[in-house]
Image 1 (cartoon, rainbow, N blue to C red):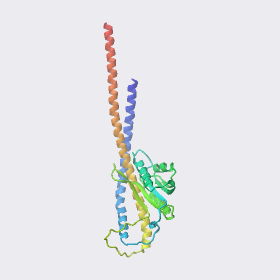
Image 2 (cartoon, rainbow, N blue to C red):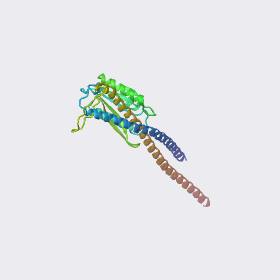
Image 3 (cartoon, helix red, strand yellow):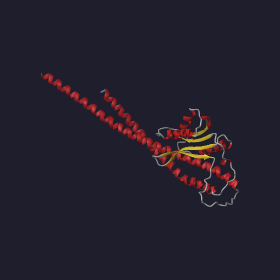
Image 4 (cartoon, rainbow, N blue to C red):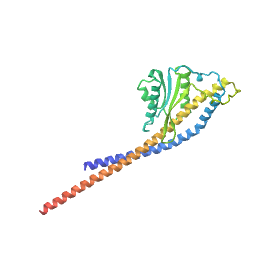
Length: 288
């Protein structure tokens, strides 16, 4: 009887887990829908910004600008976008591992790194290991917005212009679909306008306003657009990863319920068979 009670308790616990994971899956699915819509709406603007820089790259030499300054790379800055909460499978660890591999490829020590963390998981991991944290912002549950991107972009720009960092990279998960999120390493600073392909004609631009004023307006906006797009992708990827993780947890709980129910029925059957055998044995003993 004690074994049966224990099995019933385990089945009840598995059913509770299944109900919770199903509810969390529905919540993540609703948030994913909104985040996905924001990502898809923002991508055309980001693509157009790339095209504008592509055209400027075909114009030849551009005027000097602090965000275009090339110098020897001694200190690296990394903008890491993770989540504030867990229960999203290997989403955060994949991003953390991507950053670790990137630092290993560059042969960087913690003293050569400045981290701009968006999301508590990445911040906690690297701060406990002695990496300097230049900026920390939480990742909103409703998804990162323009103010979050502006705060990160301003901090990164100030660190680069002041010479605190010589290179800046974005580490985030590109949203492919609700099941697939691709860890991405994107060079952010210095901004390198794509050069025109060989054989393409060079344009003789007439700038209005001046080229200096144009870059003064365009490059910070481009930087902000890149950061915002990365944070939107990260928000959608987080909800997609959590929805997938909760779906798998719910399915696993269902399989556990089936297995435990089968085991409990076997135990019950064995118990009933034993009791019947005892009754029959007792009856035979009375006849004798």
